[in-house]
Image (cartoon, rainbow over all chains, first blue to last red; front, top):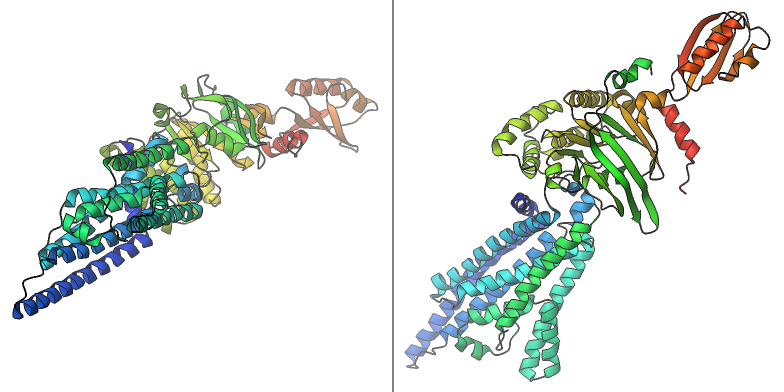
Length: 285
Length: 324
């Protein structure tokens, strides 16, 4: 499978990018701060519980809600960082190689053009999967070790965060088959931002019971389903108690997207990848 | 250039097995025609020179043949297979004009990557990579990153990449553009060596002396179409200029000579010299015969073979420099 040769090259190339290292450094910093923050939260909670016990007040019983909120904040950050990393790592993947001319010696080799696109996709997807798994694991382990709390549905939630990245990756790779690196970066980032804002608008709409705002959110999640998949992940990552307590909020949702929405998002990523292959097949280099 | 410069083409019969065949390849960008009609045949084992002024469509033509550009119309076959055929590509080598590689890789890693793309096994790659590095004069620097290479070394590794798979056909697009005179000589020798191994070479170059010294046949393209093609020796001797060194020049001889050759200059004196253009060698023989009969002793007939440059300039300027 020639795609794997390209995937390997892409993976190695990705690791050479300063931006990727920037995100990794930021991520390490985040994890350190997160562990510290979680530790402070747990300390505070224990002192509060101790004071309540002194006064003879029964335990609040809401520890799970707040621990879950801490986890949600951590995972939201992971989701955001991996989204940014996805876009910036892959933004010029094909466009910049066309500009640089490095594809001119690759394409005439006995490899099909779609295999090149697929290989690049797999290379980035592998890199992102490693990153996401490591980051989610850091957050979950912190909650478990420091806070003695384990969120539900860890596997499904992690896969959904990965799906968010794959949606953005498909979008970025597709764009890079016909847009310049800079244009592609601007367009994809705007779409990403729109998806996040659309998700917020939907939450506001739910809180205010405003149909128009909800509809805007739904439309934005059809255009780019990345944020809706995050919201489903966040819903799954929390115990029902926490979801109901928090209500509509910037980081989660009370009305999780349906199974159809997940199917749509998977198809979305797949179709855009196919479209990227088709466009690149005809592209003059 | 001496007559011996193009001797190889005369000494060795040209194979009749076409390795590259193109039929009316055409590329249009919007309303700009980059390649009007590329129809040519390149035979097995020959070094084929592809010449033309800047913008004539040389690189576009090569790119269509190696699958980088989709032709607007027309077809082509390489090694008997249609364009883009993976089996044919396995036996094709290509050095792009703008040779830019993933320069963060070490030289050996770059070749390993390209070897994998050719589908070569680990053992093949391990054996072949040092071989090609040696072949292009990069032995000993394979462990350095390509970024640290000079332009000439990068071009050499580009050539190494194109030869990795022991190709049957090699497309070289300006292979010596970044090389110094010594490097150019190396490449010339390399081409002749490949030719001796029976490899077909499609050489796209604007260095006419280079083409003249290695190519068996050439095609000259202008405005996106082939305007002249043929064996190098034929192209060069298509119109011969000869200098007749005479013992005397009786009256009327110059006029009579015009029946055989086209007289260009006459230098009268004790040893008259007549420079004339002849259509072919027979015409020269007839002219000599006439001169002797007319009482002009012929002391010498010096053919002035035209260089490829002169032929090229002649053909291209006749075609007109402005695109139609």
